[in-house]
Length: 48
Image (cartoon, rainbow, N blue to C red; front, side, top):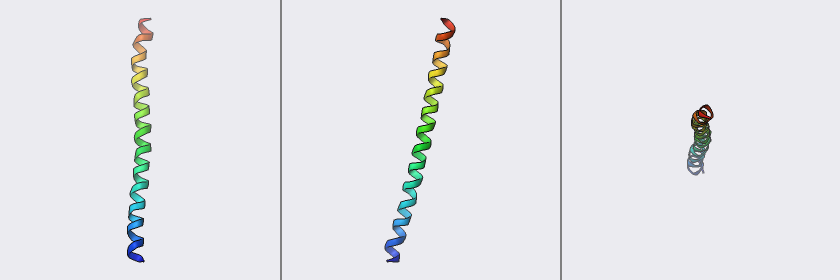
């Protein structure tokens, strides 16, 4: 029972950390996209 219990706990933690990393990556990607869009939109507004 102990042997079957420990691997499950080991597998549970990486999934949680991976999900956290995915959330952080998505937020970073969204902020990066927003920055790129704003930087590209600035020249258009300036030239207009």
